[in-house]
Amino acid sequence: MNAESDERGRVAEPVDRHPATGDVTEAATDEQELGSRAPDFIKARRTLHLSWQVGVFVVGLAVVGAGVVMLPLPGPGWLVIFAGMAIWATEFVWAQLVLRWTKRKVTEAAQRALDPKVRRRNIILTTVGLVIIAVLVGIYVWKYGIVMPWKIAR
Image 1 (tube, rainbow, N blue to C red):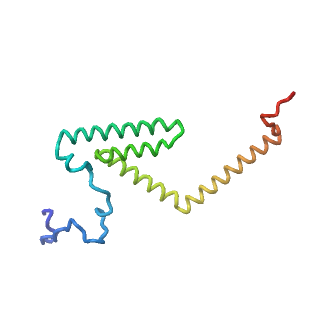
Image 2: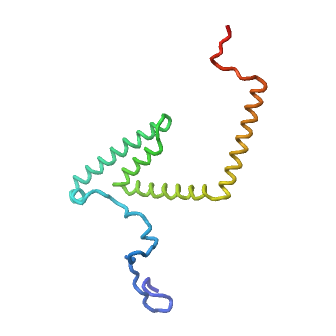
Image 3: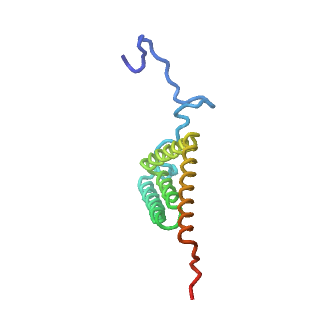
């Protein structure tokens, strides 16, 4: 049995690798091909392409480093880290694969969060948590009262 025939011994029809306009296939919905997105004149010269990759890596590293610094400090840390990964993804296949995986996981999490059962559960848990906090704050205020920090006894 070879790859070009079916079980009955007939030769299978060749598969069209390029779907017609408007056809939606798994390959058509996938993102761009993996690999360098550098301009052709840069890819044509090995030394220039290597220096281009080094430059992209250094810029991406600076952006990711700034994002890591912003994680404990004020600022959009994760957003900046993903921006650095996107810079790396313009040149490196590993970064493209990481971004695809991340995008897929974020989409799955968003779909799970929009599920009516999950939303209902989250609303109920949030409401119960707020009621518990309100009761605890009420008990504290009832027992100790409210003392404003700017009221200084003389």
